[in-house]
Image (cartoon, rainbow, N blue to C red; front, side):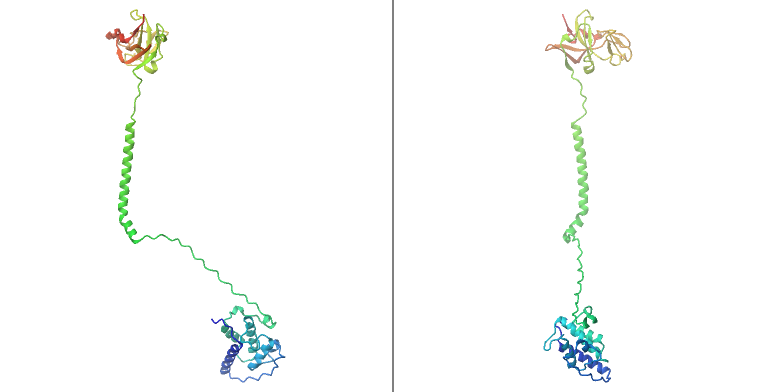
Length: 326
Ligand code: FES
């Protein structure tokens, strides 16, 4: 579009061309307009329908008298151009049956590139005020939508992944199985390194000095821990002896109890009874209680359960089965 504002000569040339075209279509005779004195004509008079300028000079005189167009200016300013259009509209409207005003204004606006929304009102034009044309509101820019850019994998990488995927799955399964088996084997090895162990008391242990065991007494001090009684008595063959008896019934292996009031061992299972010396005297027990090894070591009585002595076998005469006091 041409930004250059049309001059008055251009506007008049367009008007003349339109007039000529209208005359060719409708060759009706046009009455000669009355002469108008240019300096005395007011804008309202120039636009009034009763004074109909016919020639170009009359039109220009009327417009110049209004002051909208300078007398010798090459081109009108942008705002004045709108006023010129209004004047041309008024003049053209007075030359009926010439082309209509709307057609003329449309032709002029199209030639100047003026938008139709900037068309001034008739009231503002007649009052001689310059209309204020609001600039068009710019359209809202369209924001570009954010798109997530996915990393693209090359053709070679796609081919490698596609071909190796089954093998990768197989390797994954194999390694997982191997890891599981290895874990189970490791746990088994660890369990083997810590087996169930039945901790038994030592077979040899010290039970204190001789003075802890008075004559004709039975001590239960070591029965629960080591399963022995320490007996100090002079009732066996009249000898002052200290020996250790195993707390196991010789009938079926129950644990008898020492009854200090009755001065005997009594088995709770079948009622076998034993004297303080360990000799059986009642119940089903077939033989005396067994002795274990006893000796003095470092001034202390030391019991050795690894060695047993049976009275019915004559083993109580073994010096390792007792400690004799003078
Ligand atoms: Fe002691 Fe039978 S086990 S009497």
